[in-house]
Amino acid sequence: MDKKQSNHEVNLKGTLVSVFFVGIVIVAMWVAVYLMYVAR
Amino acid sequence: MIAQPERKIALWHLGVAYTAFLIGTLMGVLQVFIRNDALQLPAWLDYYQILTAHGVLLALIYTTFFIFAFFITGMSKSLGSFGPKVRLFSWIGLWVTLLGTVMATVMIIAGEASVLYTFYAPLKANGFYYVGLALVIIGTWVSSFALVGHYIVWRRKNKGQLSPLFAFMTITTIVLWIIACLGVVATVLFQYIPWAFGWTDTINVELSRSLFWYFGHPLVYFWLLPAYIAWYTIVPKLLGVKVFSDSLARLAFVLFILFSIPVGFHHQLTEPGISNFWKFLQVVLTFMVIVPSLMTAFSMFATFEISGRKKGGTGLFGWFKKLPWRDVRFTSIFIAMAFFIPGGAGGIINASFQLNEVVHNTLWIVGHFHITVGTPVAMTFMGLTFWLIPYLTGRRFTKRMQRLGFVQIITWSIGMLLMSTAQHVLGLMGAPRRTAYSGYNDHPSAMEWFDGIISNHVTMAIGGTILFLSAMILMYIVIMTMFVLPKAETPEQMVEFPLAESDMSNTPKWLENWWIWISIAAALIIIAYAIPLTHMIQHAPPGSKGFITW
Image 1 (cartoon, chains in turn purple, green):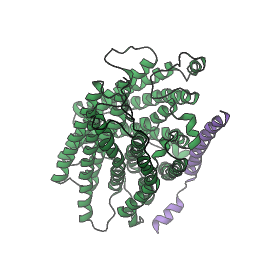
Image 2 (image 1 turned 120 degrees about the vertical axis):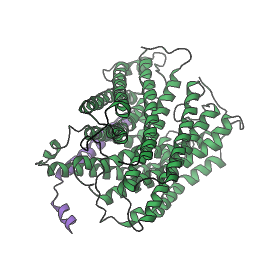
Image 3 (image 1 turned 30 degrees about the horizontal axis):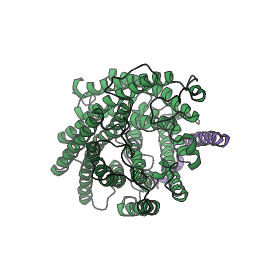
């Protein structure tokens, strides 16, 4: 119970933005090589 | 501090690991100079010998010995002292692995095995090279079973309890390793050794490569999971918090057992002997590995944020400034993680079926390897080295060493950024891998590749030189912490093993039921491999004789 409460109290907004950043890097690199593949 | 006998075994492993590291990095810097025409090798030494030694000694030997040093220390720390049998088998494992290493290295130096670390047939090395590699695997199995034995004894004494997170993760890695090695053991024992000694005339090349990559991809996770163990169990301690979620950490690890093995075909996407259906199935399974990888990324950011906020960080990213940047044990691992973001993204590109055609057989792959194994894994190991050796020797890790540690990780990062970016860009343009410098008879298109500021042999050579300098600084730190620095006399001077607390109260017991995970892994392996491998054996093309091209 205590743990559940403490998890709710933790502010993880920065974590959310950070993992979005990782996702954007993955997508951007993938799309860049995909466009290269299509262009060839 | 752990018991003296385990300290001795772990230190021997580290000694071998760093001897391999020294020779392997020297072979690395020689390569970039040769590619730059700045160095002419003597007649008795050629580029491919150096390339093979670099790959084998760093990717296979440094990693393996370091990993077992870390495991032995961590298992003794988290489960208690080893019994006499566990100690004996840990020593036997060390000596058998070392014998295999020496045998394989002698063959490479003698010019009998310039087959690169992937030893693709039909390139044929001296039979004793393959015997050496087999001994390396057998040795690691002996060491692995010693640790599994230690774990079983603990579980018998603590019936119904979950094991400590470090031990759970170590056993996960060992389970993965043992299942993975079955492929390479099969091909080395039944294909390469009989062929290399002349007992059979030809070899089924496609089968040998498929069995190699059955092993080769989880091999990557054998390197990576010990780094993840450090990220999950050591980093929170350095940050002054608990493990973010024990259940998440354990689930991520068992998912690696399931999804890192039945995926080897994504290394063979350009090979004609495997039908598209099986390649596609394994591509899909490869993408499943992204799930535990991103779980790990989330867990790490959450650990950072919780710690930073606890120390007063506010706003969206105020916590970032509160991280212990002055602690080289943390900063090294943070940089390692940062490198893994583009490294992992590159891996997704490599495994994306058609996109693989853009990068396959190019220097991109070499660059990818260096920002996955060469930095996230290697720099995590460096970050561990800074405290692991003094912890084992009982010596102090002085302020001067801490400063040198920073110089080392910064130079490694700069060198790697220069070298691996050059390799990625050159690869995208078409520059080949696995070969010495090739200008295709000075064809203008090939010459243009090397005209850029980044995509230049000089950039690569500068990067490689900085990396070598960094490696030598690390060797200095290793020697100092192993033999020279003063012994710690007070508790404050003692170097600790920073193992974080992990709250297991909400962790489901089924996460540690190995039969579930090994059974699902076996089922996935059978689904992904049984039919295509059977096909390769039943409808085998004519075998190939051996080629010795050097």
